[in-house]
Image (tube, rainbow over all chains, first blue to last red; front, side):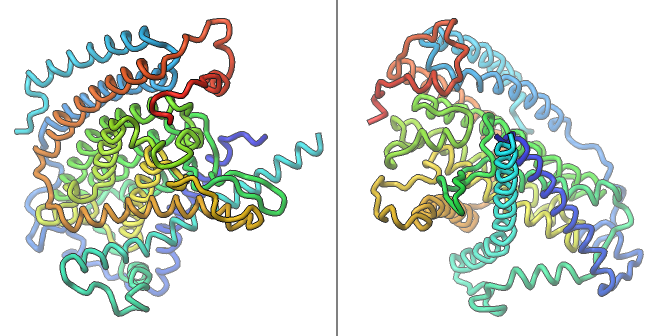
Length: 122
Length: 387
């Protein structure tokens, strides 16, 4: 029996080869045929034809960090549901009640976040 | 021993052929998907769409590809070189890899070797899919950051927040799908999930007890958001962000983003088909073709799989053609205040139905060492959803 993970490894290698090949090899081959005339205006950041004001390394909303943190929290909890989802049919009422408790605790934290306005985007 | 070694080599060759097939099909299909979308959207908007290159403009995407290859490849002076080159590659790799575990057909026998039409049947298939689809966000964020352009940065940030927010309800919808298929004897492997939905469309997961439709719809909505497609295409909202994270990209690097987006659309369609719509099973379990037509018969499931994925692709086109883009705060609110609580409630409802309707004695500790497939196999009593 072939280990089922070996084809995955091969496919990943193929994907890397295809992706890297398309962006590197084609640009190398096509360099022979292709114009390359950079000039200062052309290599400016594109801002609809206006001269860019300041750099792109600007401050952005702290909300993005909040979303990232919430995602980590809830995604880790969601992963705990997966093993239960596969076997819970064999666990009967006990499994349901226990998972109900788990989701209940999750929901309590969720409601707290909602109350504190973590999901508002203003 | 020699025979066993030989069979491993044969299996390796078969795996290589299947990998080549999958990658080739994706790469060949994408240009036609792009053409199809342009044609369909044009039709909805009472335009003609591409019609100059080749019959019905079929070769338009090919012409575009050649153009992208031979036009000047602008490398802006302000970008972070390494990440700028890396981002489209990082975007493309997971898009191609997801297809590894998706069964696109039943068994097929060629030259005396029988094999399943799936690159590999991982026992943790669905986790593999989740892991890879969540890698897609890196490409977008890296591209937005490396471009060093305000629009790109905003597009990348928006996209990261959006993809991350919709990944959560997507994961929860998949939990519900897993529970539904485990009630019918499926496991985490996608092949077993498809197998659990055999014998007619009324056994497909999205029709399960009338509630299976909810996770199906949630998965589909989240899938659209994950692929950054309309009406959730805020990362590249052209009216406000030019082209979002790929504003500064040109040439083949831009083409890679494009390819990855359409490959991801195919992936989402294929996963929705596998989890909810019976995979490669035909809607009505009637054997039309006689057994003697072996090869043609083996291609029937591939046909049904393609039809179902094609339906999802059409739905992508139609949604893009008909729906306006969402506002950003509504988009995030919809994920966090709408889909997440709905998904949690849905999980509890599904769990309650299964506990009521698919009751089974708990597995005694002494026998719990058996492989899960056997433990599932002994659940013979047909539940109310089993017909």
